[in-house]
Amino acid sequence: MNKLKQAYVKYWKTELNDKSKFIHRENNIFHDYFREIPFIKLKTFLDRRDIDLTDKTLLIAGCGKGTDVHYLKKFYSPRIYVCDIAKKAVDVTVASFENVQGTVGDIEALPFDDNSFDYSFVAESLHHLSKPTLGLYELLRVAKYGVIVIEPNDSILTRIATSLGLAHRVEELGNYVFRFSKKDVVKIASSLFYDYSVTRFFSIHRIAKTKPEFLILKALNGIANIIYPHWGNYIVFVIRKTQSLNE
Image (cartoon, rainbow, N blue to C red; front, side):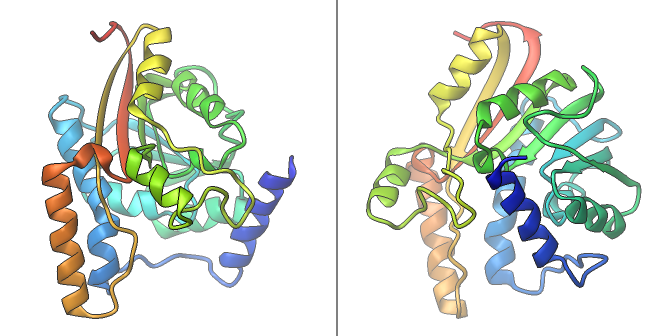
């Protein structure tokens, strides 16, 4: 295990040290409104492509403390299996939700056979890896139908923000923040002759301290998603294992 992975395991062991379960509550509307946007966008995105995760076997990789499980369960009832390189994260996630199984697993070398799950899912975990594209290929390998991804978007605005020090180039744990672009997705999927779909949007990370500030941020976020969604800080994409090359 390299130093970055060791740091990640140590982080979750410390973060969840005194917890056997993580209670997810929407008790801070300022935070939860923006935190939920990627999952609301994802639901609309998958609906338009006739992808329904209900009753499907779904691997959630890089589960952390279970935040992704929490939000996905609002819209779907899949048969969830989680994995994370940190055992503490897996234990807390499995204990926090009913009918969720899990195991310790490295996204860059998943401990599952080919096509073990209907779909695999990852949200904001690939960019923590030393080899994010390897992680993506592994998620494709273990999925029968395809992979669903929520990650930071490599847009002109995120590049400007990074150059100005307003967004991380390297995060606290020492990982380079790999942001996926639409071109990245197109090339990866096309090289495999797989079908792909991409959407991009804004979801502000700043947590408002007052209701007026929250309303301003909410309005700005909404306007940005109407005018220039492709410049947003999030990218959602699905790569489906069907032999079809998009034009």
